[in-house]
Each structure stands twice: as C-alpha cells, then as structure tokens.
Length: 206
Image 1 (tube, rainbow, N blue to C red):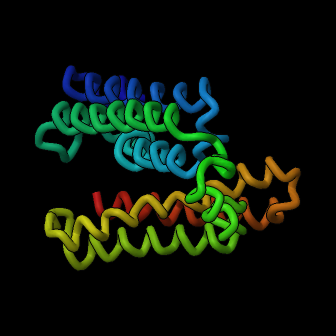
Image 2: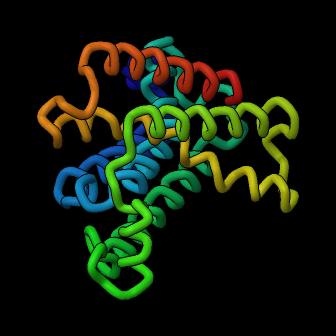
C-alpha cells in the first residue's frame, strides 16, 4: 500500500524499517515461549511495537497517507524506534534466560511471595483495572504534561504505562483454562472496544 501512496525513497525506507521491526517482534514471540513464561512483559513489548511503529503503518496505509507524512525526519524517527524495539527484545530475551518460569520454589523470598499470592493467576477484573490505570496515566501525561515531561514525576508516571496492555492477557488465560477464566464473547467485544480506544488515543496524541 505504501508503494501506491508514497513511492519515494524516504517513505519506502521508513515503511521497510517499520515492517522489519514488526516482523522481528512477531517472530521473537512466535519462535520462543516467552508469551507463556513472561506474558505481561511480552505483551508490553508487542504493545510498544504496535503503538509506535506497526500501528502507524497500518493506520497511515488505511488512510491512504504516506507513513512519512507529518514527520520532519521520518527515517530518524522510525530508525530510533526500531533500535529501541530491538534493544527491548534483546534485554527481554536475556531477562527470560535468568528468570524461572514459575520460581515458586526458589528461595525464601519467592516462597513467601508465593504464599502471599504473588504468583497466582490474576482474575480478569484485576487485569482490566491495571489496563485502565495504565491508559489513564497515558492520558494524564498527554493532556496535562504533554509529550516532553522529563521531570522525575514524569518518569514515575512512565513506569505505570506498561499496565495499558494488561487486558490483552485475558484471551491467553482463557485459552490456558479452556474458557473457564472468563466468558469469551463479552471479553472479546470489550477488548475490541478497548483496543480502539487505545489506538484512538495514540493517534490523537501522535
């Protein structure tokens, strides 16, 4: 589609960078078991790819607009985002190698956390609450502080934004529990609406 709407070097190169970054992320998740062993951090990495790169490619292509439109230096923008994406994947891979999948029997601390329920499967309501907190923090950041909030408080708020992706774990848990975790149809409808809300906010906040 980008070949049709913007057949010039800068646009095609930008689209290729985004495509390469997206394919790398998807293959990393597909070829490994990280979605099973570390679901929340994996969904966060995928969410970062969608909101910063893949989503832009899909939205701009659907609107028949070059992906490089409205950017002063699209190659630099998407190049830096791809670098961050690859770095996140690398760090995540290393992190997964040094952390156990369950860890509930490792050491006194982990046994204590297990007894307190830290490793229990969270219910759907908790995941929805986490998602709304993450989305709310994103909205507060954009509306009140803008995109250039580099203060300590701004960094503190940034630490909660990954929670935005928590509800997208629900289909995975439904599959793992053979449908007993949550009702499929209402969940999928709610997730579709939530995804549209997240996408709309991302587009509005650029």
